[in-house]
Image (cartoon, rainbow over all chains, first blue to last red; front, top):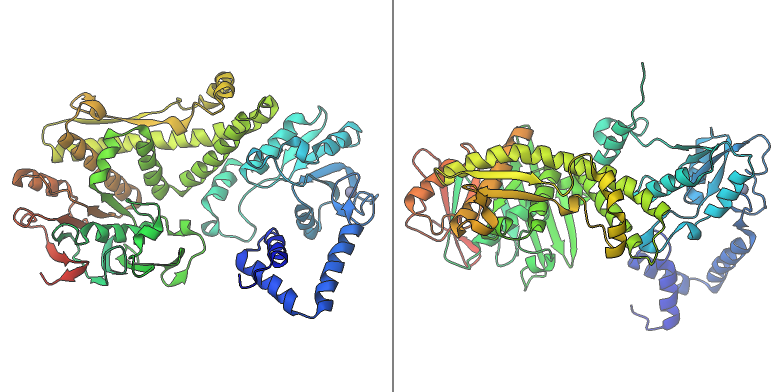
Length: 199
Length: 356
Ligand SMILES: [Zn+2]
């Protein structure tokens, strides 16, 4: 680093904690903000502060929202009895982009991960189980990631959900429009395991 | 498959080498410490991105250069494959047919190489970890789905062990890791059993050729029988909690190897152990040939040392006809390929090719 300044180092470290930002990129962002007009940097920090203040977790689904309950939880046209459980808000956003899902969500903000010290208490599990106890939920769809951690979380939900609530797991398989030859081996193995009967 | 051209720069003690090998036997002659082993290591690294001598890639760069470059052109049944690796300041860039690759695993299976080195005697002599590594490497090359299951198994095992280190692990949490550990573990057990079954017959054939008259027996020794892992994890859970680790599972598997009816690890001579290790490598090659329809490239480091003319002839006999192999040798007098086997010789001196 060319500047030997603790303040700059702190800024670089802050950028490095963002997903997908490596050392080089973090340095580039920091240097850019430091050499840009003061107003630019002020505008950025102001935007971060405002968004942070405006956004909270929905008291029902724990997704990030400006209004509480969030727009999806307060939408009477959506099926409040069908809950899709995702690890991150980005998962709910991805499903919303599909435009066909008519149920609601629950965002766990992570997955079970003993190596990173994440157990059920570190996730929004209690909030989910409270929703189930209310008796208005008939099915939860475990849409956690297809990783060891996402799979463990889905299994945990299936075992901890109270009787009477159906738990399903989203299918993992070959992408639409994708040829088999472009699909990686792990995905193919799971797609074969999760095959469906057709006749 | 055949290596048609090999090029490297600054790999270990090798300077610039541009080699146009022959299609069958290639003898690499040279005195000690001239770069013969490094040449084989460079071919292995170019094909697999792995070295058999180190996991530290920094060691592969010529100390003065701080970078190295290896490139192989390989003629496969349908088409030519060019693999290129450039290592510079700790960064590895791999190109397949000139196209930069993001995932190193894309290299797997493109060019298959089987290496036998003096260190391989440890396959017979040492603990089970090296034999599991042999299994995992060979199977990952042949079955990418095996590699996927192996990586998942290892990750789940790490997570489960971490959970076991907690003061009072939650049984409900252990359950969800056990389900996955059993599922991926059963895949490993099943594929390993099938692989060793096939390997055993081929290894005993190869051994019969190298050490005429003696018998080699190879068998899978799974820590847990197929279909029983979920049950075993349940039965051993209390013990796992006490020991704070997963004591049983395919991560404890072994391969039993016996020469003339007795365990090779404890009872075989140094020579028998070396022959048994070589037989395993030749069987690995044979098996790859059966599965893929193409003969891997064979790299034999220092196999001719200490062999008399009869044993050397037996060794050549064990190399499949049509296979391309690279054999290093220091011994100028004895190492002569048998009649009828096309052979080319190269002499290596101070890290460069000399005219032979
Ligand atoms: Zn909500």
